[in-house]
Length: 317
Image (cartoon, one colour):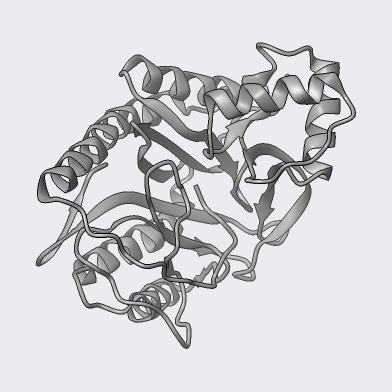
């Protein structure tokens, strides 16, 4: 899942025992295997006239049936929408045969995350746009190894996408993963930036590339359907807010969640009030829907990778 973020900070790295490191990577691989298998299912179910909410819930159900957790709600972003559209309660939207559809979902095993996305279209006119984000991804993967600077990768991604006649989305990026942390301290940009950090052996990234026919910049919609818990405390007025907060703390920890997930346990009216208060108090972070300009089209490609001594291992491909 994407995040509008280009700044980087690098925390001190804690050394781990080799056995502990290998156990961690196996958990990343288990999450990746589940995501890889569900990618194939997702391609089959995302068809014209299919309700978006059915796609979201089917993908999430398939992941849970594989014995893994959800690291964020399934996103089904259409046309100029680049990220963060996960069906709201009672969503009536359908896939149209002319749509460019990005399906982005994630899973985790003991908090170790797999994040993956792909783009489909039912109109061959959009094949070049889809190919641009895929080729940019493949080019970046070939570059990833310890010591390579993230800004150099971003420059190559930008050059590749522009070579197809499109723009990269400059304010969306790939991101370092950590246990129960979807967006950690480093990014891999989609454009050339002045400063970056170096890729290190043992790091795990969700690498995602975006190509657009639009401006290359996304803006936030005034609404959100995905939230995450923030490490803050504040007094709450409504009893329902305290109930929802406790539920999120127990079930989702720091990982993003969908409003509709909570609707199965809390009344619709009470849930709306609770989310409003918790967001206003800063206890919930809202992931507003992100879109390029109206009428444009966006494609996306994403996989999770483990950085090895001389390259990388894709866990979701």
